[in-house]
Length: 202
Image 1 (cartoon, one colour):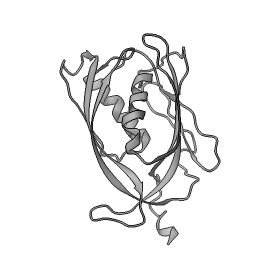
Image 2: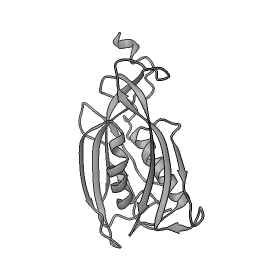
Image 3: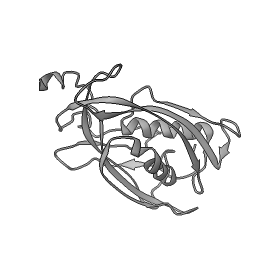
Image 4: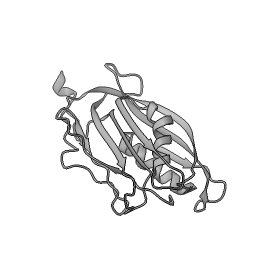
């Protein structure tokens, strides 16, 4: 688990996009009321596999090996990775000991737009979601969540593996002090509860 900092999110205000609310309350994620009702039209996509070894060298936030794995699963899930994403912590000091250099092996699938299926990759209905994560300076921590440094590293090395657009970020990760950040982007991810979306287009 991290030693400091927390993650919050606000829903987007665009009428053309879905809103996703990510809030830290008892370490649970909650969404805006209309987050599961995409307003953008579904379009076909296929899953693309990725493998990456994530290295995190924290200054303000220090994670145990298992704690880093938990937060990475959370970020992957909220960004739209397939449900079977795998995060394997690479422990050097033991699973529950804070480690300045924590690592994890990631294997996950992200959705990419495609008009035709490929062998073993059937078409999946996808939509563009707008996601905004933020933390204000001095915000009280109600639950342990991904800190400024971790979200910044995730946005630098993992987020580019997803299909995104209109990314905007403002990170102020001050070592050993209260930090703040805002990260917003659109991501192409599965359309929830919309199995008939692609059939309706034909």
